[in-house]
Length: 247
Length: 256
Image 1 (cartoon, each protein chain N blue to C red):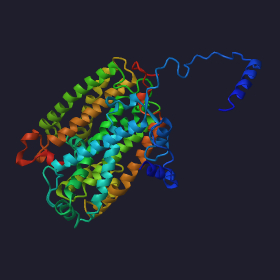
Image 2: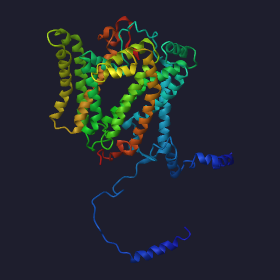
Image 3: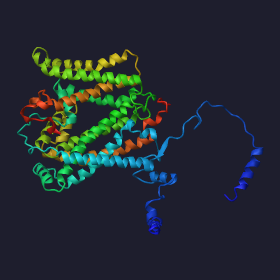
Image 4: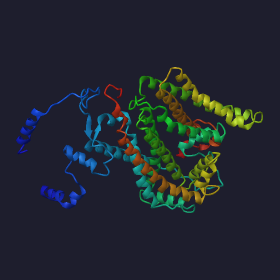
């Protein structure tokens, strides 16, 4: 058995995938991080201070995890959905009654969406009260605010898709607020709805925004956000000396 | 390694002839002097395992919640039948609640725009490097945030209740121009409520950090108060009720 493992891990195919040995020593543990696309956003070593639960509550990572869950459940929901006024509602009924685990899938997407809004807001609040927006992290704070707005946009556009009374009137109320903005308001409303009221055009546009434009924006800007965290020296907790003051 | 002896003797020879001179004394910390041991852990496996656990925890939480509570689904959308109350998604209920207290352009456009602009400007107002990475930065910061939060929790619900029970804007309708009733008076009232804690803190010679702590806390706790008021305390006709005492079998939780 160990010979087989040795043969496999020494083969050219395996070594073309993994360019380091088993990570039980400092060198290979470093290489795991630097040579793996999923790990490379992490530093090779992390300070214990920045890992303290009571400092960050892991809220940023939880946001990313919930976004991942929403992407997967959302993709599966797309298999049983069509954004047309005649058929959307029927698809939701079918999903909930006939599709195996369909109701569970929809529940996870719905509660996950609420959870993401909540966690992203809490993450911003945590960053504010720990003063982690201070230089050199100013720009990343602004990027984070943009991500919060995108999260709200993702949740709001998804709200219409079931095409029930709750969805219809929530979006009617929500978009009518936009029209009160004196300069751009009516343009924004017209762009979102594609017509005078919530109808087929609005459903088409909300669908496109919800499954493509906004998630792509979130994915792209989240990459920028995490990359900037690294470039700006990791979590702000790292700047604090043992005594509690910094510098 | 085998010829380690050779370079060593070479270095010894060199060191006998090379001279050194002191160029300058610099007052700066040396790289590791007076510092504790490097308090870090390898990201693999420590951070990787923590993230895996967090992922499993989040998924478990969502699955258990989804097994217990079904996502709401009402009748098919009907543009001819209005629901009562018609509410936006919960995270916009703060805006919808604001709409009850003044002109939409002031309440639903100017206020949130100013709020987002302030939040984005925070690191440019408070740009001192000191105090980063510590909750509330200092004991004083903690006190400022706590007192401001208590003030906001009392004043904003009182404002919502009084403005809904004795709506000055309705009582004086026709006696003053609409612009003054709907925009000027509510705008001044809101500004006073938000600025009072700022003025109080200002008198104690605050740091920029304490100023943004005050303003952010008023706005954040205010947003929670308005969101909860709109989401939990508004029933049919968008009137104020206790959440457990809604008429007509309406439950605010059905709107999630």
